[in-house]
Every structure is written in structure tokens, then in C-alpha cells.
Image (cartoon, rainbow, N blue to C red; front, side, top):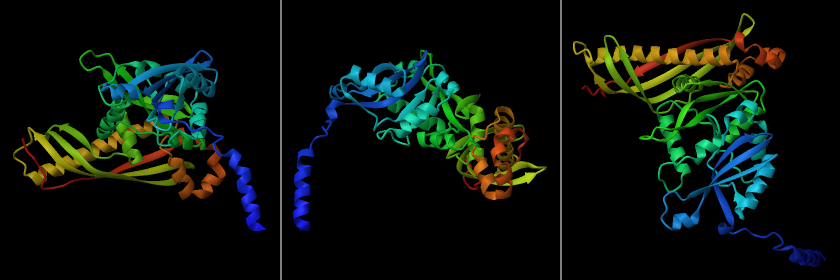
Length: 371
């Protein structure tokens, strides 16, 4: 009886097989990058699409630009489908570039759309354009197999120099679910320099309540990275009287944040640990032994990192009034009684937040290269 039932069920399912048309690769428009702007009350999309025909013809740009508008993102994407004549495929999208007006008005609708789309990848990079996203994506990029790879390599380069906060779709979505914390994204612009034309990272946009509330410079960005524990391998250049100019190669760094309550307000003790090698010395004080010079480099490195970190915290908490670092999560874990009573009011007391910064700075001996 049971076998007969299963056979009958299979027979009923046979007419349904193949009712959903499969989409071949050549029927899809593979989107590499998406720019999103405002056009009055509508959304304007700029899609950078991989062109397999150009790739097959050894065209190193291998991409084309498609523009579409709609009252909603879903409508704009549907209009893009109609224009392209192929199904828009977001499964290989590497970055989403938000126009400045979108960031100022609020990113919640955009993030919700891509977060709900089954094709979207949660690790897609997100950036804010200085001005319109379309003007950045439309400009010619360096010759690469895929145009968007130029921007991906650019992001890696800025990150290695401690001037870029790397932000992905899932990170922004997570920040929007927690009203106590903000978020930050890189700001991209196109350089009109004829000799070195290209996309550049010009700062960091800070989001509060999902809206851009301030922009930090690339120099200020490194302070955020120290405070967030996101500095990887990078270089520091020190120039101080008595030690000359020295380049330090940071090989490891980490941060520990402890939350407590002082005078009725949250207080964060930020401890940064840094280990570096001496890369190159110029006009170093030759009268000092290498170990003595390293002692001075350690002190100078400590002062630089503490100064940058304190400045970033001052800007975020007391200038922009935004906990983009997510320190509220640490406060909630370490001070649960305070959070239970005052957690809802946390965004309103950020100007009262106190902090201290200590730096454990060490230079690895035996790697000095003098010049």
C-alpha cells in the first residue's frame, strides 16, 4: 500500500518537472558592480556588466554600462532586465556603490532590498561615492580582465596603507538592526588627473541611524582602524627631531576594549598592541646604538598610534555622536545592569562617553636596515 502511494505521488509530480525554465549563462547579464543614485523621487541604477563576447575577443575591458530607473529598486532592476534583454544576475556582484544623496537620505531601503535578494552575496563590498555613483562607475578604469577588479585592487591597496575601512553588505545590515551602533563605509571619487586618472578613496563616511552624518579623512581613518582592531600589515612613517625619518612595517596589531561606568556614563579603556619591524632609516642618529634607536622608535610609534586613536574616538563620540565601532556591544556584555536600565538612552548620551587609550608598542630587534 505504501509503495503504491509513493508511485502515485511520483506520477503526479512528473507533469511539474521542468515547469521552471532553467536560465543558461549566455542568457544572463552578469553584474560586477552596481551604482545607486537618486533621480528625483526615483532610483537610478548604473550597472557594470561583464561582457563575455568582449572577453572572447580579447577586449581587456570586458564590460559595459547599463542604466535604468524606477520608483523602487525592484522596479529599476526590472527595467534593467527589459533594457538588457537578459536576466540580471547579481550572484557575482563584487561591490555596491551608493551615491552621496542615497547615503545622506538613508541606506535602509537599499540594504533591505539586497539583503532579501536570494542572489546577493552578504560579503559584497559597499562604498559611498563622493557625488553621484554613476559618475564614478562610468569613468574608464585601468585595463583589466574585469573593470571592477581595478576597484577591488584599489581597495586592497588602501587597506594595506591603513586608509580604508572595509565594509560589506552584512555589516551594514547588522548595524541597522541595532540602533545603538552606527557604521562606516569608504568614500570613493574619480580623480580627474590626466596623468593618473582613476578611482581614489578619499575618506570614510560615518552612518548614524542608517544615514551619513559625517565624513572622516583618510588620515583620520587609520585611527578608526586602530580602535577597531582592523589594522593589518601596514607602514608607518615617523619623522621626529632626534630620530630622523624611519619607516616601520607593522606586522601585527590587536585591540582590547574594556567598558566600565564612570560618573554615571560609559567609559571605554582602549588598549592597542602593536609589533613592528624597522623598514628603513634615513638620517638616523648614528651616535646611538641600534637598540637605543629602537627604544626611541617604540616611543614615537606609541605616541603616533595613541594620538590617531584618541582623535578618531573624539570625532566619533563627541563630534559625530555615533558609535560606529560597536562598542555598545562590549558595554552590554560587561555592564549588563547599566545596559538593562540605560541601554535605550545610549544613543542620546554619546557626547558623555569617556575613553582612554594605551598603546603597547614594540619594535622587533635585529631587523634594522640603515641607509
